[in-house]
Image (cartoon, rainbow, N blue to C red; front, side):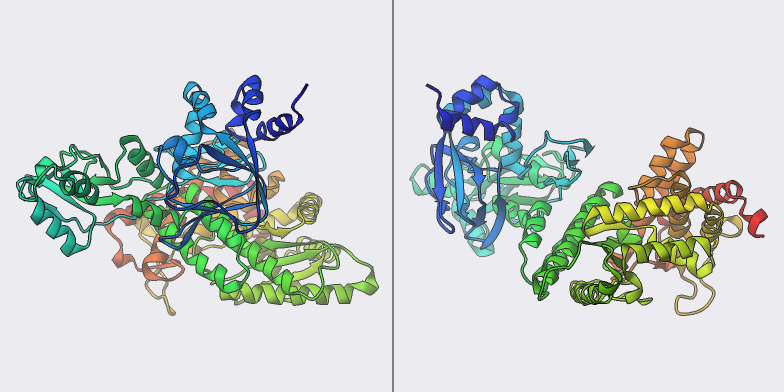
Length: 639
């Protein structure tokens, strides 16, 4: 007779890793050993320090909160298909976190004794569990694209959503306390007490040779094995495990588990042959996990107040600083920070909708414009957004517009509270000119395209760099289709857009010297945005419009797509892609350094190397503007 319950368990598990890579018969046999557990909201699954359970868990329904009661911080939330409670399986020790039902939940308890042989015989299963335990990587196999650099990765899942791994650099202590191998245990203990630390590094000739921790004192001295007058060389753990400074959270966790240790020593070259520069403890890892992108995303989504989102945005800026210091690829950094910023915007809109007296009368889409729409807005800058709602009968239009203007006003106010300045030109959805029905938007865009004066070209340039921040994608897609069909009907519009792309002032003069502002508030400063970034952004826009490329708003991704479509110009387009990323990275670093937008650069503050890096991008700018001028015959038609 068939076990219908185990069949249902197997049908569920086969949809989630690592069970989806297991043999079908093996999964069916395992499912017969699974125990189903019901947890009421707020009830514990296991507690901090509790003896290891004989099973680990999979969430079937509901949500589980993992938290560290000592640090009083939430580490993660697990929902349908997520695995938790792996410590007894991986590390073979008692729990270091508390697991509690965040809402009414049903769990599948997977017996460790039954599962361990499966894990040991299947390397892919073992790898997944190790990664899940070490870095909260939910699903490294479900992907369509992976970007890797030195073991660091981010993935796009089948739905195109970003899955962020724990690759940010870990925070660690640079205040090293050390002593020599001949130091007595008593003196070493006194040093640890004086500095309120749990370990002391043992060095010889300024090189690390061992470490003594509280655990060593308990297990080797308090037990009577060694007297306190003995030297620390008798109880130290040696050799020490060393790593270079730029170690990631996942790498640190893996190293500690692999070597069954609680401290890692960071040295100049990553080996014991160079001097120590820092030390990482298990506590440092737990603190760093508070800045895990996945945790931040979930925390933002659960925020009920605008001020909570504002606080979480501070963590995003800390991540950005860390990524730039770690010298991660700009495309990767931008992707993650944009994803986090988009999550903030979505939550502000969701909170605003909750505060409205009635739900929206029709479907709508909130569009992010400009640098935010391109996924290139890393620093706290001003808002550029618009709202489009479904068409309604003429007599219903005033009331519908009034509703969405009220919502938009609430949203833009909320965005301002979390750090987005109001747009000086009032290009925001709270402005009636930027909060329109689908047909009204079509009418406005038609006017821009048919009557492309300087102001219309400027408006369309900002508007054409948009992405869906919230709402129904069908509205945005229909608008995109309309734009491209209209441009095809009026190709002269592209010439005007191309002309606009050539209006940005040149970045260099004779002998490739920087051209700086001649007057005004920023006299003698270099305008990085107008003279370097804008020409690249504008050129990419007109080129993708001419090719009718939909769904790509990011500038360097536009150039990479153009490189595919035009092999004869591939080298130039890839150079433009690189230049855009390099300039955005430079602008972001300058902005963080000077606490501004990073737009205006004081050249005297730059090193020679920094100036050379900037100038390397100028050639691509000149060549892409030459291409635009020739391709669209701007001077002949408009000159």
